[in-house]
Image 1: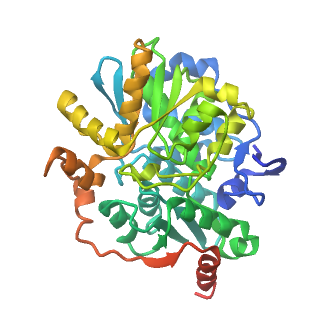
Image 2: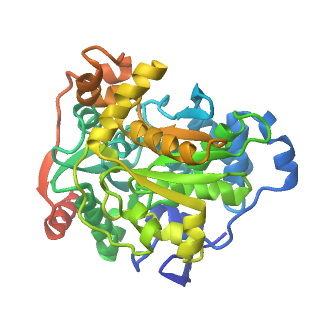
Length: 435
């Protein structure tokens, strides 16, 4: 299979180039030349398959021309080593828990798959691989965990100063070894722009053998499609889900669209955002107007220029009319989010994190207008990662902190402070070449 740039379909590369170089030189994003569809035989039996078997079928549909079945099965089995259970809060009101991985966030699926796929693609390459990743909270921790102590690999994580939770920051900064954290004086959008600037410097990118672990990398999105199928088959036969997705950079929603492209029956997608409502505004008006992000309590969604928007456009052939029929957009304030955390606990005895709370609000709004719908809200992170918010709303000790998160509390933070200046960042990267 070949992959083309969303900015220039004539620019085509193979899988290894698309995954390891991550970003085309024209600043587009890579998409498969042909979007696969799973056949009737698969859909006749998909509900009886294990989570791992579902994942293999999806990954094989995308990568079978380039990765052997045995290797791909090992990659998937190593990725899907934990469940994503569907929890029912009320009639038609479901939550998909995606936080049962090592870093307690949905990003574990994509990061673990990508680390294993990259290791297979570079199995005969002695060069050190440099993984660059910008994070608004959970991506960095998942990538750090997935690549920690991986031979011949170093990871550089950029995160916005003062805009991630305390325990999220420890996941980025306390591992050491081959993991380096850069604390950027700016927003997530600034971090993302710095990463892209490094890739667009082709000489620097080649010399450092750069690759990205953000959702600009297609290897992040395909494994996130796994759990859409896994969630849907947990509903009764004949019920098509409405997926409600707390959204920031829109990689998770794009993965859902890929699952639909494979043949999964979906009633609707709902993009749930905080005050950073660029995509809901586009869906209302047809005008896409990226802007600087604003800080909220659902920090992983604080994105003002979502990179995967161009992939969403590509999947709908650039048609606003088609996109708005399949995706609805809703946005909520911090006050509404805080109230939702309290309401879910009071009515359902369930602790929902600030991102899931935004999704739950959107699910209630959707079902109010579509009472027969079955909504599945993606609960993207464990509430213990946002203790300050949870305890402010529900009281002290309201959330049990998993041991793998609790042990980080007393670890030392190790990070380098940098300005959000691309020249300064590239100079810092140049210093790695002499090491």
